Length: 260
Image: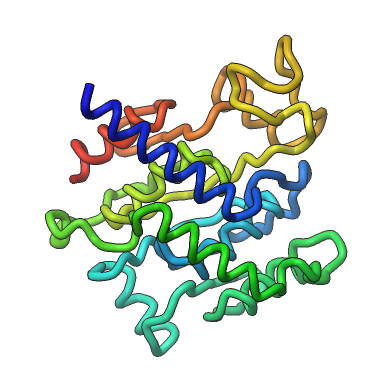
């Protein structure tokens, strides 16, 4: 019972963090311009500047390889130091354009330039308050996802990357991403943002009642085939164990037992 209450408290904190963020990271383009080679982002969940980038990645509906670099991390922080020359986050690698870069604004401009419809960064994604809101979201979230769980400091990463279907503003997904960050588990982030108003609301009580029908030819239509049901996030697939599961509380328990 206490465990359930604690989890619900964290969900509430995550929801407040989403509201502070102005709902960014909810909506996305239905037909993303996904590049041939995987985009790679070295970051950690509680970093406000990393959150700025993840919000834009959600808006553009791109899938990205995430390499968690929590404070105290010993796996991917050294990779960033070796490749970029300094420990600064986020750090982004795009093998499609042969670019690698620091600075959230530079990464955001790159994403809009190469994977946005107009090639230009919208004004609201250059606004200074963008970073302030992201910082407040981290504070409200209790700075979870910032520090390495020291009990896993010497543990090797899984042979295969985990896969997470999520969207940035989902409070339930946020809890899972925080644990993935703290356990330093690399994963493929499959973004599944809302594509239209009919998608709004939790899966069990959408604004539009009745059978859920995704937007034809949208990304969500393909995801329904993967999940074999209505869209619900978070959804975790662990190819190392064959586990496939919904429900944030169950996913968090699984990650801590399997990799904690």
